[in-house]
Amino acid sequence: MRILHINAISGIRSTGRSYLDLAEYLNNNGDEGYIAYASGLPYKKGYKIGKPFEYKIHGLLSRAFGMQAYFSKNGTRNLLSYIDRLDPDLVHLGNLHANFINLELLLTYLARKDLPTVLTLHDCWFFTGKCCHYTVDNCYKWQGQCLNCPRLQKDNPSWFLDRTNKMHRDKKLWLGEIPRLAVVGVSDWLTNEAKKSFLASANIVTRIYNWIDSDVFKPVQTFATRKRLGLNRQFVILGVASGWSNLKGLDKFIELAGLVSKDVSIVLVGNIKTPVRLPDNIIKIKETHNVNELVEYYSMADVFINLSIEETFGKVTAEALACGTPAIVINSTANPELIGDGCGYVVEKDDAAKVLEHLSNIQKQGKAAYSQYCIEYARKSFNKHDRIHDYIVLYDNLIGRGFAKC
Image (tube, rainbow, N blue to C red):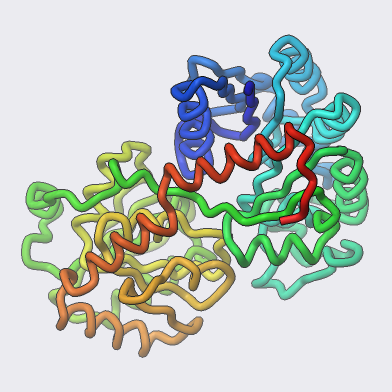
């Protein structure tokens, strides 16, 4: 079985690591796994799509004409030539909204070739006109017809035009023409949302959770890390994001910093592009792609907090649990699915009092009272071997023309 994965990035961040794991599993177990990508780490069986200059032109045209994934024709045609040479048994699509690919060329090619296609939803972009998320704006037009988009200046912004109606219709047309299509949501919440969209007509619509490698994400000693950060006796709250904004809860962490006691410190890992003054009890650490370093931060923390209100999975929460750290999350989108019994708490949006109450509970009981529950839940629900096996079964099903709805 020869599988080609196409994703914006390779080897880093959440999706990049996932497709690397899939390809490596295939290559180590008698099959063949390849990755086509625009950025990230080079892969031995990889193909780099397009060039940086083409990405920049694509981004400019996308904003000017209000249409994403309609450009990069040269890079996409070269990709299709590569697919012809590779002759895969199945193509697995990940994130494609990074101004690097022409969606029409790719999807019509897959339909014409009758190539079995798996589409994993890491956000909502594939079934909306342009939006990666929409719950904050309370916009559900995608269930019928996108128009008058309230998010033109969000996600991939449009400077002038609202072309969401066209993009929504085109995605419905192009994806609907693929004879063998499986749609995978990375959470129950996202999968159920997809079933309310035109993607419900796919041959298979199912949920496969993102996974955590428990051989890597596990509790480790962190005396040196705490000493380096000056946190030897502090109760440590951790937040992790590739980029921090108020949608990710940055403003709420700043508010929380003013409410906690002096023996509590907050560590935020990730980039903050907009200049903001952080309180003295918040330690800012830049984004890291070093997995072992991430494991140290997760293990060091007494509690992990995810204050994002739009999560299609929340892999950083699952990684923290795997390292034995309880979590507090907002009761929104996929967040509650990540909190098993004894693993932490789910709170309503803007309920700072409840967050403080749960922090006090964790501080009084001690992290150790939660750790084993966290580890066991992460290993049961997000086991790397089991979740990759789910994909292998799905691949076999599509290639073998098994069209039973899931």
